[in-house]
Image (cartoon, rainbow, N blue to C red; front, side, top):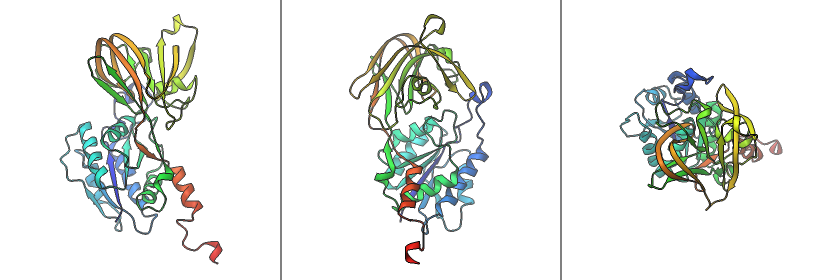
Length: 334
């Protein structure tokens, strides 16, 4: 029997950027509805995979189990939630051992936590967070159908997945921060509310993907060159005050916030290489959230080639259509 894991992050999409920017609030009711749509999407295959959801203190997963379709077997993962990011990593580690695919509802931070907890499990990330460079903004039913086709083996997962690169910053005192889309350096002296709010705080960092359509540092890098998420290497950036630099770019730093950046250095960093920055007093963040305070440190930014294996739902449906996977009576047989 095939098996699908589902992780719903109750905290995703609810940080302070809902008040300071234009991000949409994704409340627990909306997340529950998305998860219920995921289960409905599983019924696109005749024999849906068994489903296990990570439990949460908000009761989202429990409600989804209670309202599951009759022909889908759904249960909760046997673990006690703490309400912290460690829950996501522990659940991902558990799913790695027995699931055939995994769906995560959250933002870049949630997807990063899942990636750090699992190895090569096919993963489909659905956007319900604030920073959504990596997760797909798709209907839950579509996500469920794609995951069902992968989990049941109806399509070859090797053909419809790709390895998403990651990035990391490490200090000379051997502390590190890992990011999925980006690791940022900001001139704040404390972590505070964690959410990166003011674009003027950004000093630079490193990205695993670059596109003008992306939000945050990945969007800034995209103004000067593109980098696909499965492309080897990364891009390093150093930023400065726009009043003191001729080379500037406009980009979207957060939902509802577009501004101008001054870029003093743009460099492609190959696997095995790095960018080094001398830091007096700053904070290192990952995927739009401040993580680590650093003082009088040398910080090394470098690519991490072994990231999560993400499902391309477009590739899944292209493959399914090409092979008439969901067709019961082909035109050729009529």
